[in-house]
Length: 169
Image (tube, rainbow, N blue to C red):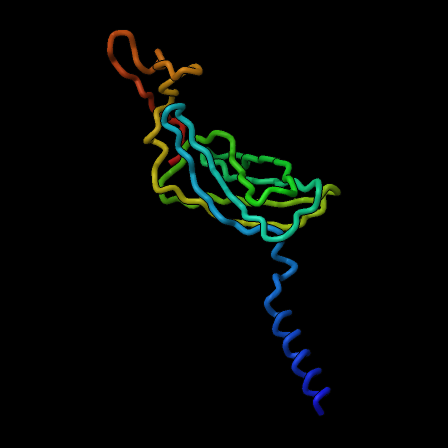
């Protein structure tokens, strides 16, 4: 009777602990951050996505991120090697144009192993709380010492921040 009770208790404990395990289809990372970065000094905007490692990542893994292009056209694709010792993975898009406030932009991330087999797929959306019109169309500074850009700050004292009229409405 005691052995039966011990076995029954061990079985119940094993099932309870098994229920707490991470599902296999979730993958080795979880989404931990997503935002737009606006750098007014150099007049750029980009997506930034961060992933937190929650399980081992196989050697030779690559992240393939597809960012919706706010200016229209094909998605912007970034391939980045992932190192097994990283606890946080940061993916950044190339420079963007035409980001609009409160509009959701789609991002798809795929982790693939060395043999190009998909390990994990993450789909998300990113919204900006600013419109890209807050940025000038030309960098405010140039060079390694942040020299004022003469195309923006004219010798006659006038300032030309420019305007990007080619963005979709």
